[in-house]
Image 1: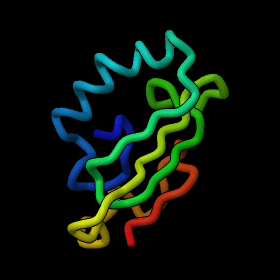
Image 2 (image 1 turned 135 degrees about the horizontal axis):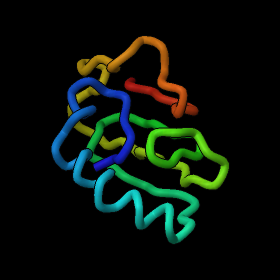
Image 3 (image 1 turned 45 degrees about the horizontal axis):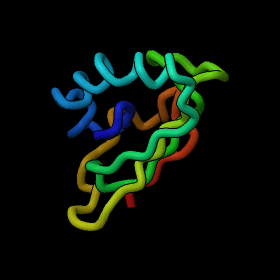
Image 4 (image 1 turned 60 degrees about the vertical axis):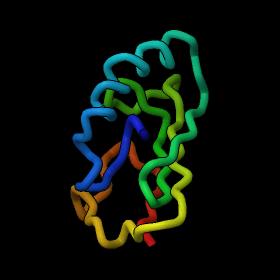
Length: 91
């Protein structure tokens, strides 16, 4: 699951919260540059982000999306993208 996502239906999934708690410190500690995830049926790319803050040394998170249920059926958490979003597309 994506550590960062902007879709209302997946924003507070238990897996997302657990991944942030357990995986994000490891990604940051080991200077990971990029993280690829799926699960959400849409494309998203973050700015470099760590612990919810845009930071030059943080990894870029890319949600590659997948076929299946259209994410346009699931609204964004906010119409205005979060500060850490570089690109998002629910179509």
